[in-house]
Structures are given as C-alpha cells and as structure tokens.
Length: 72
Image (cartoon, rainbow, N blue to C red; front, side, top):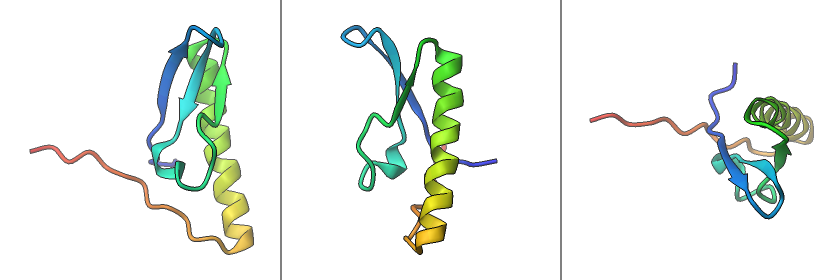
C-alpha cells in the first residue's frame, strides 16, 4: 500500500474530478489523472502512483518520500 497524498477536486470546466499528487508535483504535470466520479478518480490516482514509482525505479530516478500529517 502506498502512503502518498492524493487531492481529488471537482473541475466545473472539465466536468471531471481531477487528481493531484503533491509529492510528485516537481516531477510530473498536475493534475495527473481524472475520473468521472470520485471513486474512479481515486482508482486512477492509485494506478498513476504505482505507474510512476515503477518507472522511476526502473530508470534509477530518486523517488519522492511520502508526506505524513503531523498531528500536534
């Protein structure tokens, strides 16, 4: 299971839920995927995370660390 952040936001312009992965923002154009509904967007986001991680590992690219929420 990955621990990367995923932001799912509705876009009136696109009429889709757009997915942004904050940890990947310096390496990949955002938003990086979408869905017709929230569930589809989350599923597609999880697939994109796995796809990039596999590609970066294969290419020897440094993989960004997942960010964690710091609760006071």
